[in-house]
Image 1 (tube, rainbow, N blue to C red):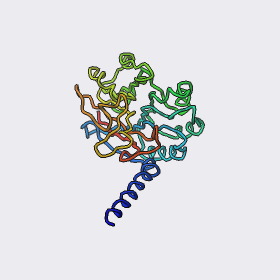
Image 2 (cartoon, rainbow, N blue to C red):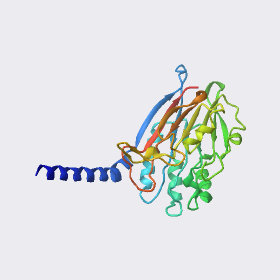
Image 3 (cartoon, rainbow, N blue to C red):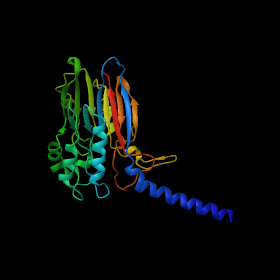
Image 4 (tube, rainbow, N blue to C red):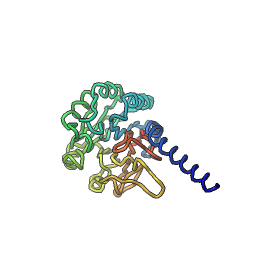
Length: 269
């Protein structure tokens, strides 16, 4: 009798975990706040990073609107998107609603984006640049911009093309750099291994989803997110890498112990 009760409790717990993973955690957006740098005598530059939205059948525009509201409440100076807007554009591509939502994102120093591997699939390569332009995001494809901030300083924001389905060119990306502080956007975090000799202070990536479903002793890792897959890594030559665990899902519409993330950085330079 006791064994039967334990068995039924186990089944109920398993069902509860599955329901939570499919219906609750994917909508439980968590905002993480971080301080980067130590010059507390100045006002920081507030940077918000979004990644891996993966709009699809199971990701409604209402969810995207919720993200927009949360981001705008942070009053960011800069918004950065590190790729994978749609999961598969051919299957689900309501670009008008997406553009309307992304247009509401507000950042006085600009909104910048790079390609992810999913942005190339399902016809996405044809429309992704148009969608980002219509949403007032500057799409950085092996290029960068020097963004003026206070006290005559500036931040260089560089964006690599996708390392899996695009053609990521590091030298081209950094060619017009004129700032002492560099943020580099690279969808795949393991690309960081090739960036350590280029005087880059902060690398922002996504792609990994943090494993998306994290079971005890088991972490699912994507190609090019096998070494670096979650949160901060202090690398060589004073380079810091941050891997955003993303907002959406791919392959299966579930998350477990890796809730959707908005990352907010108070940046002192």
